[in-house]
Image 1 (cartoon, rainbow, N blue to C red):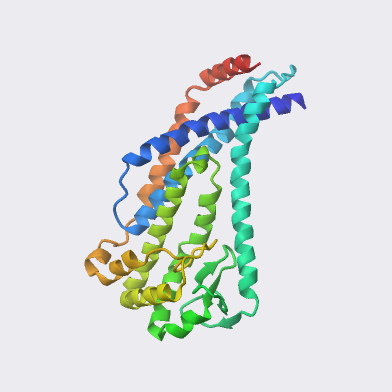
Image 2: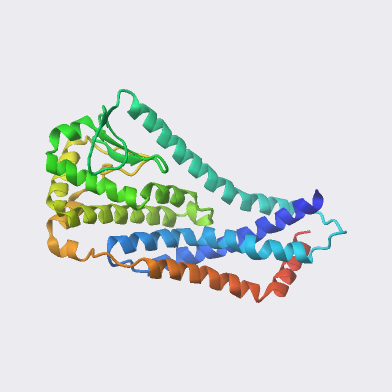
Length: 317
């Protein structure tokens, strides 16, 4: 049992050390990065940058560090984790626990809102949408896709009453884009990445930037279907119906933010023309290569990695 606790402490310490270093790199590097280009490309870049510290540090521990510790630690000799090691390992564990708690809070908040929306909700059929849709009674003009595996569209009654048929088609086209790109799942993942970055303003900034780029991407896909003007009109109507802002735990067509920029993009062909679809493969490939390079670089220094571990253990004993 002591040996298992010792290996667990070492793994958490390694995770914490790598995580802090990579989070610091992102914090320092994000100010020098410029994210231009189509919304789809920008959304993916924000997502990958936010994912890098947590993903890389977890993979480092699982694929490299744990095998090294298990291979080099003597099986017949039990080593005890010192108080200092346990304290630092607990601090590292809070990063993982915090990520899980953020995910659970997000899920519970969404479930709570959905329960309130489904009371008295009635079904409505949109031919262009492959998921169930419901009309709800809500003071805020809600239009939102909810769920990850069983997705549903919720739309407030006043939105139906004030929007024309073509405007509703544009709204549905916008929400269909969110469904196709699995934006609800990505939004949840953004909240759950286990890293120290999550306690810095940079994490919130990246998440807001991803949300904005994702909304612009959905706007552009509606515009490509010939419904750009109708979507701009619907956005303005929904904004006028809203009284103040409303914090929603889901991605909504309008959540109280300024819609002027989005409407201008939809109304100005030159701005929309810059949103031509781009290939996302290079970004995913670059992300995979970056993590692979880190793991390969560490794998070439396995003996030194063990020596560093031994030095750290002696220092903390």
